[in-house]
Image (tube, rainbow, N blue to C red; front, side, top):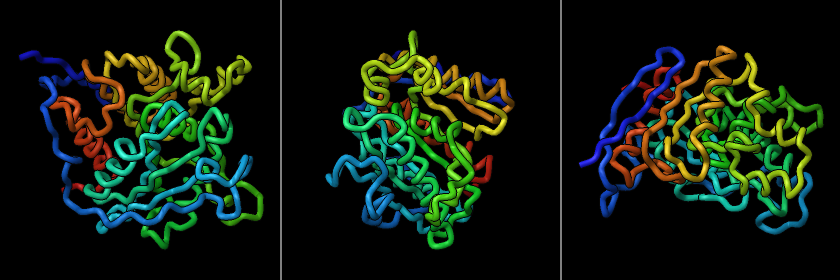
Amino acid sequence: MLRSALFSLALSAAAVALHAQTAPPPSAVAYPAGGAVAAKPGDPMLLWPNGAPSAQGDADDDRPTLTAYIALQNPTKTAVIVTPGGGYQHLSMEKEGSLVAQWLNAQGVTAFVLKYRLGPKYHNPVELGDALRAIRTVRSRAAEWGIDKGKVGMLGFSAGGHLTASTSVLYDDGLPTGDAIDKESSRPDFVVLCYPVIRLDAPYMHSGSRKMLLGDTPDEALVEKMSLTALVNADTPPAFLYTTTDDKTVPVMNSVLWYSALVKNGIPAELHAFQHGTHGSGLGQFDPALKEWPTLLLHWLQANGWAAKP
């Protein structure tokens, strides 16, 4: 039986932990169980009921939405907006969306799944605008949903991780538009980045995400800006990162460079880089080693007061 290592980095203490890995089983359980249960998800809510900015029509792909999964128990009043991946071209709405929201509910955390607009029909900054609007929307209805406005995080996978990281450096404190939702801050209080795209330039870029987000021939200054690491500063929110060292789709250095930028700016951060694992693993329930990462995330959330301790 082969064994592999999980290289765990933490800002507070750089530690090394080993995790066993075997071949994936022929079947797997659903999402990891927790101490609470999920309520039935609500209907998708339009982020802009009267039409989204820059919309090119009124089809389903022109209308970004947010679907609420309100936890029946949420003692810390935390909310997490889940941002599925898909290379900015499609969205993994179940594996990196609804299943993750249900897992968060099981840990006593309210969740929302974001459906944002995609390329090649839409390019930057439309996707970012959808994500920032989602954060504002959750804060604007915090009392209704039993949420603390100061405990609104984002969790993104792959290209959704890039979008999530973008919100943590390209947010604002509110917009003077006359829209009550726009008055809310769009800064996430923490972010969770799962095998994220970060760099959109060589040698670590994911070319598909770059093309769908920025187009065929983007300006180099825009490429550098949307590669994000240079924008990290002392006000960037804390982050938890999960990835695999031999990811063949999005190089592990995307996560390492983001973690490094956070450390240089004194931002609390935790990185877990498993030695082996394919891209797009979701909650990792099909792999005996990777299925441990949600537990590591739960411990991080508990340590920071974003999930209740047992």
